[in-house]
Length: 242
Image (cartoon, rainbow, N blue to C red; front, side, top):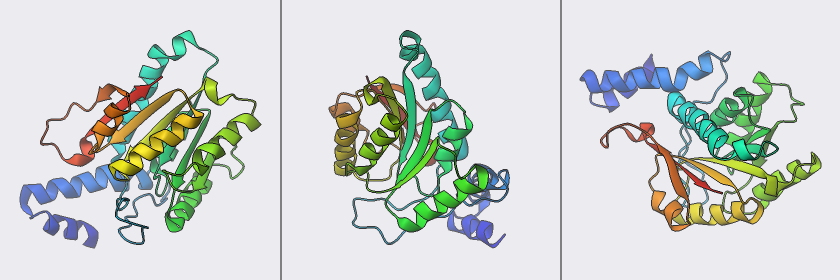
């Protein structure tokens, strides 16, 4: 209750404060409660390498779920219907404690689901959450301690695919980003992905630097239906380069 009281006061009390308390319970805490008390709600604001990396807070449950589900629907109708042998991989670049990795894996539609996290504390927390919910030997899950703008994460995913007899050029990668980094990092991360994959779906929540995707010839295929003045946690755009 202390946390909710703090949130209520921080947002000025009244109806606005109550609305943010309700959002926190419904969109953040309930996800963990429903899964036996895992912890994906940790917020981390310090210890990052430089000011190009945003502080970490979990995505709203309904928003990331909608982004993943509707992107899968679009993929099925726009890409897979002419290429039934194509594989799909989900990766959250800046996965924190693993919320979207859990959501992606729970769809049972991705061939592999995983996250990349540069903070070792959050990466360990992600590993704990995944091991609590799923088998420790689950070959469809992966986590990588690394940086979105460096090549190790893409090379590691390539290694996972080739080990399982899957060609990266016959794979579509779904990249999730909850506004985890500034525009230069975003651009470099796109270049890293495109060195390995020729088919990229980019799921961008709170898309502050969305013009970076457009400059790199990504086409938007999905965006939220919220008004322009809606809270940033409800805003998103999804892009494709195939």
